[in-house]
Image 1: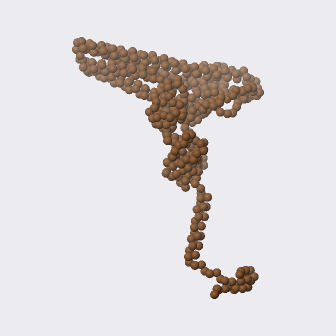
Image 2: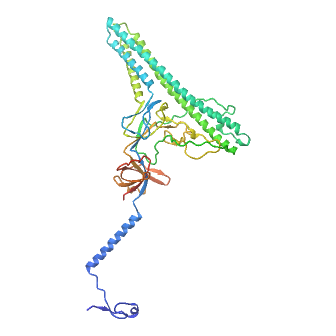
Image 3: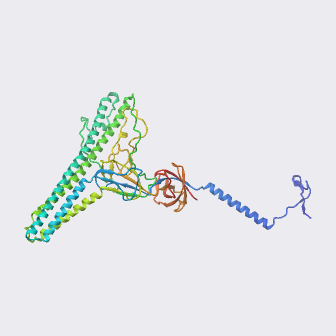
Amino acid sequence: MVARERVRGMNAAFTTGEAGVGEMRPAKPPLRPKQLIAAVVAVAVGGTAAVVTYKVMADPAPTITGQVTPAHAYYLNFGDNGTLSALNVAPGQQVKAGQLLATEDTAVDQSDLRAAQAQVSAADAALTAAEHPQTSTAAQNQLQVTTTKAQAAVTSAQSALTLAQGKAKSSVDMQAAVVASRQRMLNDDQARYAQTCTGAARPAVAPAALLVGPTGSPSETDPTPTPTPTSTPKATPPPTSTHSSPPSPKSTPPARLTPSKPPSKPSTAPTDPASLCQNLETQIAKDADAVSEANAQLTATQSAASDEQQRAADQVTQAQALLQTVQNQPNPGSVPDAATIAQAKSNLATAQALVAKDQQALATASIVAPADGVVADTAGAVGDRVDPAGIHLYGGPAGQTDTSGNQQQGFQLFAGQPTANGNGNNAGTQPGGYVPLITLYSEPMTVTAQVPEAQIGQVHAGQPVTLSVVAVNQNLHGTVDKVLLDPARVPGAVYYDVVISMAATPPGVLCGMTVNVALSS
């Protein structure tokens, strides 16, 4: 018989059921042990699922932004001053390790080497004659051979000197023409300012640039100063063949000229004289900087030319001294003293040192690829002056102000250029700037991303990631290669560079492209 429970009192009016109000209804049977256990398990599983769901929603896998970077970046320059004679590669070209990329004009270096080798031959013959004297006819023949070699060494050295002098004159004259051209531009703008900006249009105090010539000294009475070479601190050169770890977003790889549409010429003259004069003042200041820059480069060119001529002249002096020593040798058949032998050995050592120096100069006159990769950028053209700092930058048309007062915003033909220390500045306002002759990116490509310090604990080597290359709209798989522990600090934040390897690099993906990186949790 089923047990019933009676509902009494006030509760009877609110109780409904099969038995009706105030009647008896069946009591609920107690839960069995198996049912109780199942209920507890269900509650536990549901609670765990809720916690996991909340955690996933509250702390999703972080997504950060990075960029495609090369395995290494090489900034390549010649090891010595010279003139670019061949540039065998162009941006975007694939190259192999050891491939010849560029050469300097080596006419002077080869002439110097031939002269030094002639001196070695003569000095070696003189030492042999001193250490092993011959008699009669054989000794006379040996002396004649030695003298002939010494005379050939003098002739070769004199030819090298003549070649060095001609090359020096050509390079100095070329740079002097640049100075004269820029000086004419400065003079023309100064004359235009003097004619146009009079009365109310002229500022109360003339700007210093209007009164400063290329020497840097103010002069109110000489509006057309004569260009005078000035010195400038030499830019710190990058190594001849250097490589770095993958460039990160905190350091921008060196860049060069950015061609674009030249600014259009204004069609109407300005109506505001004050604006015209202000533009002229700005242009004159830039002209003055350009003259100073050209004079500084002229000084550097003269110094390099002088060094080349001095080296050639030294070889002439040494060759003549060797010839004099050979001609003053004792009579054939006589036994030379110890001093003569010592002098012959010294002459040979000097000549051999010259050969080694000239061979090194020839070796640094060529640039070869240090690794397989792609040429990212090139600077300069055949005939340009090059040195260990790279290619010297000059202010281009974009550095000139539109003095008509109708300046238009837009792209510039000569964009801001990086100097040797990597800082980007406009070439027209940064005298003495240099860029590497060749920038080479080695493969394989990687992705470098900066992770905030709050999330860096979630990143570890070997971690799989998903890469989304924005420009080509492709998703790629990647793996965290390493975490660089040198932090990048910005006001109020700290970031760490994370280098990620890509499973594959599809066509169209280039260094510098933006990549969204989704870290797997």
